[in-house]
Amino acid sequence: MGYARRTYLVPLPQVASRAGLQALNAELRARCREDQQRVMAGQTASLAERLAVEQAYLGPLPAHAPDVGLVREVVVRSTGQVRFEANVSSVPIQYAYRRLVLKADPFDVRLYADDTLVATHPRSYAQGDVRETSGRTGATTYRCCWRSRSRSPSPRRCATPCRQVSCPAC
Image (cartoon, rainbow, N blue to C red; front, side):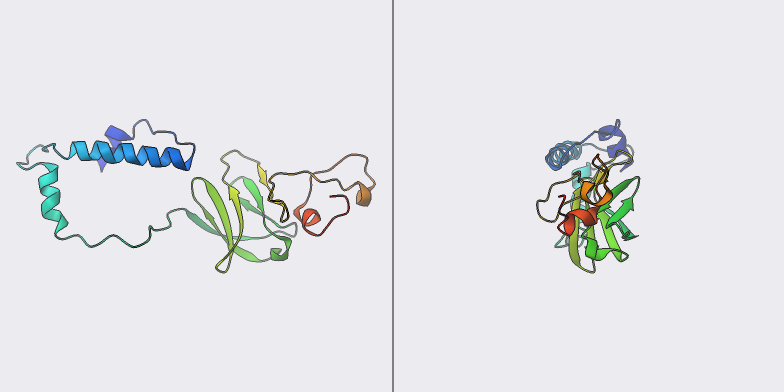
């Protein structure tokens, strides 16, 4: 593993999307197959020959790939928001004050109540991002006007409940 990491992953390749990750995996797979012809120092057989001997002792791969992302338990705030790392994501307001399971992979943040998926947001690595989703439109990061309630002449940053309970200003 150390040889492959130092040879193929230094410097660490940057991937911006799932398609880019699949392309990187295909390239790494091809380079590892080419490397199987190498004979390590102190050995007489190539890596491919040694792998063929070892494969007789290996078990089958699992039917489904394991979930390798981060898993955290989070508590939903009264505003229908949860904090993960330095960012905020919204969930439907009926989950306020409940504990949810947050699963984050390199591209998405998913929130579950028991086994039910309740919200999905693109993962952000910037600090201070707010990811909100309207239950009606699926739009992310919106603004809402609370003028009718607060008598303020300017729009304010929307709290998730306003959008989800038919706010007349929305």
